[in-house]
Length: 401
Image (cartoon, rainbow, N blue to C red; front, side):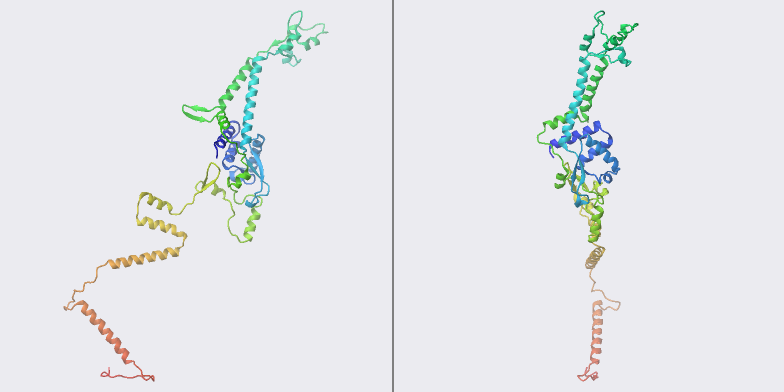
């Protein structure tokens, strides 16, 4: 985003805060942040009645700060002619320049008129008996030749045939004191200059100045963007439609259900979009997505602190492995327990073979004798059950054995 666009956005926000109510200020801030608003989902997005929002938007459009564009939004659940509200930077800045120029010109004309003009009024003008209001040049043409006074011409003609006319002082023109008008015009010009200038408190700026921002926009190089919603959507800039909003959102959901899609419609919900943990937006309005990994905080903390404790790593791995499945986790746990058991068994000391029993024989020799006896008994049982080739059991004597 260029510096000219940044200054233009700050100028529009400052003008909205200086001359409009809170509803208009909030809508201007949302339009500057999200680049555009759809007419059919700005109510759920801002949690305000759509009728009230449209009324405020219409006011801003009449003030030439907001424009509309009809965009084909059928793919995301809208209509073929969805109304998009947006701020045209170039047009809005030119409107602000023109209006500030007209205000200054009007105040200057009022001050000049109060300083230079001298008006003469008839006493009957205040009581609405006549229209005796004359400028300095016109008053010189109604001078009475006998008295040299400025007399109201309309009142003179009225009392010309009156046998008992009122005294001439009742229709003698008097000079209007325009000191109050001059003071009021000067106060208005001073207040305008104070309100449109920056407000400082020591070295801290409490309020940005509209005059300063206009000067920065004028000095910046490069044209201002029109900020069209169709161009921003093509570049992937701006907010996405909320799920379930739009004229064709229900039709789209039924088609997906009929096709067996079984998936959620495109577009975040209000809670998902409003959460700053899921995504943020840069100055151009592009979304910056953050992927949060379960158990990643513990691992990152261990890597940052340089710890290598197996207990914490196993806990983090166990938490993260819940997505994979409980069966894999149990299999890994059994395998790890078996490996630990074998490791402990290998670490145990071997049996001592030099021990003897209570009659003085070696323990190892006694065990070997028992094993030999068991082998002899097994071989005797096998020989006793031999059969010939015809299936007749052959009995063997002790000598043959």
